[in-house]
Image (cartoon, rainbow, N blue to C red):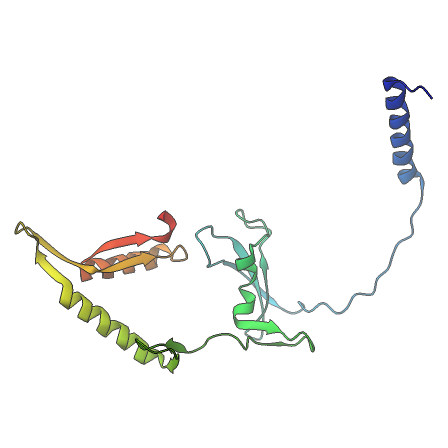
Length: 199
């Protein structure tokens, strides 16, 4: 059979048009599916911002009796328009998980809720109290600053600095937090101040 290019296009176009018109000519029956009870009834929805990076994606947090039961992207947010990355959508599971067998909401059994401390030279982690950890951090920062503080440089110029401490900020910090941390770092004489978003 000898088919020309023009003839092939005519046959292909006719087949496409026929199948397209068939979709509109036929009638379809409605499919009714009995859905399980939707778990997001009687919830309080609160818009929020994801804390993982500096993009600022919007999320909707659904709460029942003070418990977070769902977290999803905000479709009305101008940045992410309802989508969340894998980290943003996994925020829910930091605190809560659904039991795969019962479907009930429970606290995440793998969530770390205490301060973990490993002493120098040790291979074991110890559970410590928050008050102990904050006090220990403050003591170590003060000792490092006192041991390394310089009032003048080699030319006799006043510098009032400590080059043994550095500060690295994170993109999840808001302006007010960055302002306070910057003030603290400058008061300590820290000169190595950097931000994660610039690295």
